[in-house]
Image: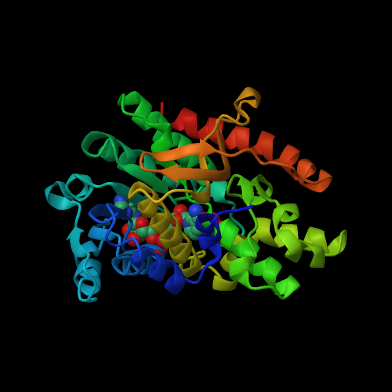
Length: 347
Ligand SMILES: NC(=O)c1ccc[n+]([C@@H]2O[C@H](COP(=O)([O-])OP(=O)(O)OC[C@H]3O[C@@H](n4cnc5c(N)ncnc54)[C@H](O)[C@@H]3O)[C@@H](O)[C@H]2O)c1
Ligand SMILES: O=C(O)C[C@H](O)C(=O)O
């Protein structure tokens, strides 16, 4: 049911990037990608992975600290992308964004044990807002990929900033939820004994706790290995709260960074392939969505088809089980609150 592109969320990076190499000669080449927050736990491995993506021509690395250092380091990798680091002085942020086709944003603070993603709002909302203002000014046509939490609220902040600047294109704004899809694939295949690359679970809704809704019923034969009742509930809980598992294990030193960098590199590669003209690229992403607007939910993650201009089709959740319908009903009011909070912040 899902295309190869959506499957790529569960592919090992080497295979994904090897696949991308096959499109090297297409118009997909010549893409300028900027990362805001390149020196952090996500930013550094993401910089490395994108330097290794043959579809990236130019990689602009920006952070409040150490960006020129990260750029110098990554630039020694012998792949074609030209890497430049930008510090905040001398208008570095605008220089980094100028001419970018894609801007990936992992800037902001991560959780510590006991915190929710929403607890990050007070710090990260203004960081994302200010980065969005710069993007709206110097790169209004760029595709903006938001990783900074709480994603449910930071994506609406970017939308509001772009609207205010008169440059909002809903097709070009994405909350990166690929890590949820990646986790669902890993955890389900661990139960089913199936290959992760062939175990694809669409994950819809948002990116925090109960707003994360895995559609295991759409995962094909692997789903048959999950016993209804306790095993199903435990699996759903693990997918919804996988982030907490990492936060707890890191014991105060941050949240998921390496798996997130992998997930963001997968999503960025899919987008670059689509921008270059590859047909049928499909990924789950948290986007401006018509699906639940009548219930006041302006943003929602579902599988979306990507094309040369960004999101070309937002797919509905499709046929879901009664358990998934209950998860969806728990998701929507929480998501609505998170979105409203983001929209108000940007005013
Ligand atoms: N979407 C997801 O699935 C997902 C997954 C993991 C983490 N996250 C989120 O990603 C964010 C970053 O996580 P991390 O572990 O990399 O944190 P980190 O603290 O290791 O790195 C964050 C980086 O952002 C930089 N930064 C802060 N303000 C900035 C600004 N105004 N401009 C540019 N750079 C700025 C910091 O200097 C730092 O280098 C957090 O909010 C975290 O919750 C999201
Ligand atoms: O859990 C977090 O705070 C980081 C991230 O959103 C995740 O899902 O790992």
